[in-house]
Image (cartoon, rainbow, N blue to C red; front, top):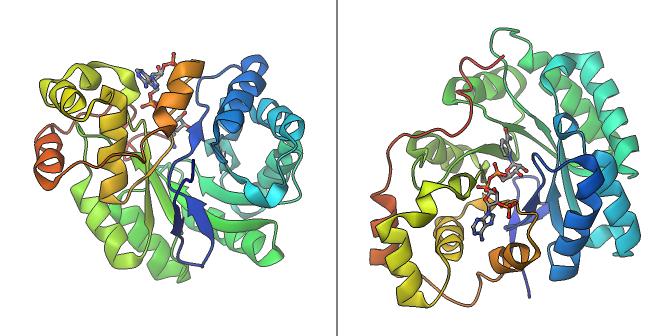
Length: 274
Ligand code: NDP
């Protein structure tokens, strides 16, 4: 199973499909990540706020997979914003992950009311210059937040990880990412495995391609150029979500899924989440 890479704007290669561990308890994380690594995933998405960086570390250690074959993402939590706090928070995450360096470090939320994501970003620039992260990016940044970061620092994030699925397609942000050279990473790519997977359009395309609804939705993302990080603690689904490179949706199939847009968030609105 070969997972294609995207090339980030600083030349670093990032697998287009990875494994998310939001809401996986720390004591269950090593088993889930271990399962994912055995299935063939090499990119893991965690965060300080998930409280499971140690569980990820345990699975990485036990896997014996060479470090340079892995791509590990973690995120700075909201109460660690600011230049010095960001540098300190990173060191905590790095140690919990048991790594010499992290592949991608993200500002988890812009928290606009604190009004300090620019200083935080300057801390991220230092981490990048120090070589302890290979790429820096953001998460849940809206167009105005991205514009301000770029205007005030000149450093374009490598990635913006945002809620994105057929119910919330983020046309404006995706367009802006394309213009600026930011990779779009979709969180909750399956819209948390709820109603979306039972939609007619999805189940009919699943039947047409002899695939599952989740595989059809993940394929839609990949063909649009999104990075996806589906989460599952179920071994069969972990494998299913990776088995999405042996078929292709045609233009009409992609267009059909794109009619499901309804501006529906399953998570917080970044403009007011502080
Ligand atoms: P997903 O869209 O990945 O959906 C996960 C849910 O879908 C789980 O309940 C899972 O169940 C179920 N599921 C997974 N695969 C299948 C399948 N093949 N068929 C049917 N159901 C399935 O949601 P997440 O919110 O977990 O998002 C993915 C990742 O994105 C997170 O783990 C995290 O890494 C990241 N994220 C980032 C955020 C941010 O603010 N930056 C916010 C939210 C998520 P089960 O586990 O029981 O198998």
